[in-house]
Length: 339
Image (cartoon, rainbow, N blue to C red; front, side, top):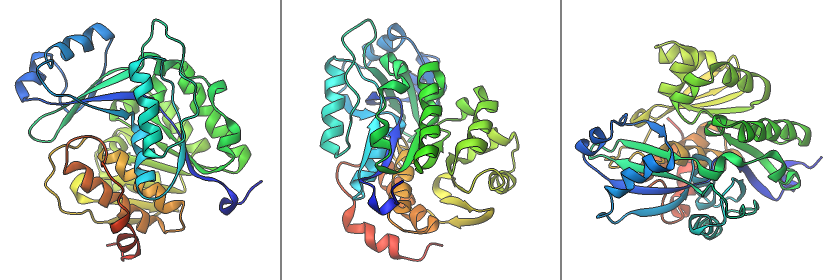
């Protein structure tokens, strides 16, 4: 079994491979379609198509997305590297996805599925003037990801695996999640899991509890998700309780920074003041910066500070990720004293 310093890659990510379609809308637009503002709704192609029809006059931005994919790109922009596994189709969106991940510096080894009834998954991200994002997701062929599509020899070359909770919505990807955790254990690769969204915590409470207790070295979640996870409105209580289940946890709390729970001890790491215009991708960027720090020898608190910085940069712009690397600021922030 290889030591971490002998492994080729920092992080092995597994998630829903979705092309993000980004649009700026007003509150009326959200109400017109009966959407739950700030949430993520799963919908079929015709439902999503109706929304896109009403956006035809806009200039829409595309990005290779999915929560874990955004995190992997943030790792690369921090100076790290990684492997990402997610299923796309052999169509225009799938080709765009593969090229975009390659340009970002992430190895994307999963074959494009032959053209079939299911297209590459897409997520229409609607951002209102208050910076809230509402996501309308058609999972498409991403739900066909199977564990036999994952190259375990590449996992063996990674220091840490990272799995997103969004995969829990379909049996195949769910099995791929569990297989990734089990293979990580076998190969001596540390495991990280992100809850992804509060609605998933509500839908799969027993599964998430089991996964955290049985497989996870590291957990990422936000304040709302951890309250739902423990069914307790006291954030302070929930943060303490997660320390009883997992070795290391990161709980983000919007502009208030985050909590780092390390072997039961809670630390607070302050955020960076910023004027937010679009919150999409903030949690993904936080996880990417934090994972970069953890896989490059920094303490959890130092890593979380870099994660907070990347999140603050992302919310100050439109779109789920930064357009450029963050190397100029990295060393200064990672070497500074967290507070």
